[in-house]
Amino acid sequence: MAKPIPPVSKYMTPSPRTIAKSDTLAKALETMREHQIRHLPVVHGNKLVGVLSDRDVKLLRTLRAVDPNTQTVEDAMTPNVYAVPADEPLDKVAAEMAEHKYGSAVVMSGETIAGIFTTVDALVALSDTYRS
Image (cartoon, rainbow, N blue to C red; front, side, top):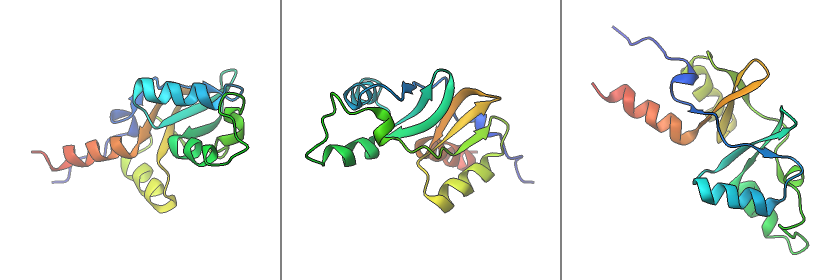
């Protein structure tokens, strides 16, 4: 008998660090390093407006004209966020992430950020699937 498919909330990282779109890239990098994370949901007030990955920041830093101390998160973020409700089935989220090569999904509870589900979280879920 197959195991029931859990919701994404079972494997998400709850209450993730966020960053304001007006913050600098230097602050984003500092936050990522300090907390050993690769994805930051970007907010304006309490509203989700984007996601910033370490890859986004590294790409921008290769440009000569970019000063991470003055360049804002808004300039580097991806505005089209893959966001899902907390009760979304894990298999649907994983399939969507794989198909579109998303590194993360922001997990929402209504209009509030409840968590973040990354490829590392997906590997934990996969590992749990094969553990008896």
